[in-house]
Length: 240
Image 1 (cartoon, rainbow, N blue to C red):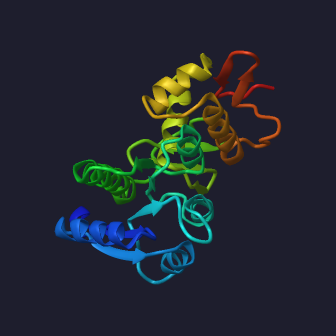
Image 2: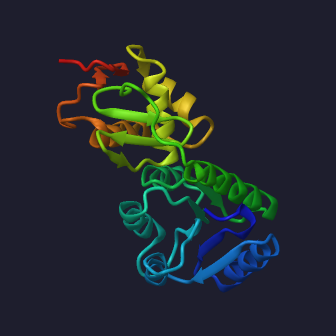
């Protein structure tokens, strides 16, 4: 991870005026920028030799839209911070972006100060995660064959590291710290997502992600257990 002020940011925006404005202002802040006007060009950059620390991604792109690019990006680079730029104020679009793995979203028109603050926050969080050279230090697994490094924001299952987005990691820790307590979807939405425009369905989708990554059999979960009509309960020992 590079120094935050020399971080390389990929700007994917088809509006030339907005693209060039972002380029100018982020460059003045000391960031390196790469510019793309569509998803295909952006994907070529992401698969190329230059490392990218953050992506500013417009939703309304010609050809494949930003959601489609985000879905593909999350398969290959689950930890890369992505901020969505959207002219849509519709809550459903924002929720979809979060569910696909966006770290944050900014609604157009946006203020420059807000944009710069969100960029700094995302880079700071990403740098903290990746800069950690610590190993997983737990003598015993947190549950099953899963080890959690809270300092390095890393998760290992047996001997293999499990890729986690920042939100998935936050949700995992929230469950682990409240073992055997029944948590309603409303509890999780309030405590993990805060004031962001997410829905109860968002909670369900993220629980399914944790099951897919950490359960021995995601179709018959033993640790992230559904409490019908209420919410979820995390069981370290595993429900038989």
